[in-house]
Length: 163
Image (cartoon, rainbow, N blue to C red; front, side, top):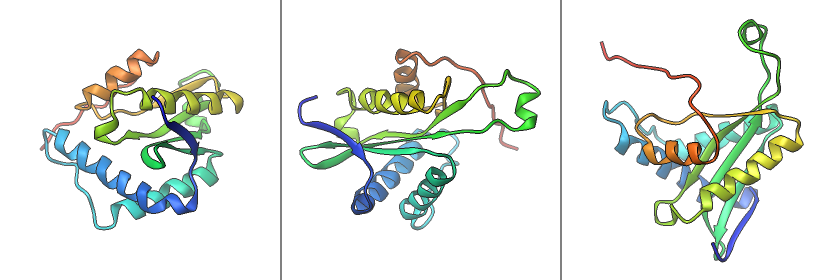
């Protein structure tokens, strides 16, 4: 996409990024057939605080996508550590996790999510990761298809039943 710029998050991006996090949870709520996704007060600010804390603790990267100096997407990747319990079930490896990938609705299907993911993948490769994990909300079929096109495959499926 012309005019697309991917750059690291900066403190002065907080207002726009908080709004993106709010938009993201609102979007997920519209997809939720069970109606269990809710947005708490100050969700965007609280989620940004959590994300910044995770970045420090897990050697991560936080990117924003800009078009004409407007933030239109975000991507976050962190490096995970396998616990002794994990190592009981999987081969030792250095996993990376894409914990956030979101593009504003009017900018979707223009390659921005793919470009963000490529930058996150490059970061994780440079850090020595040999796997990348990403969680996708099951009703979010568009994102799931994007991740499959980017080479991801289903690994674990977590089911829910209301009681």
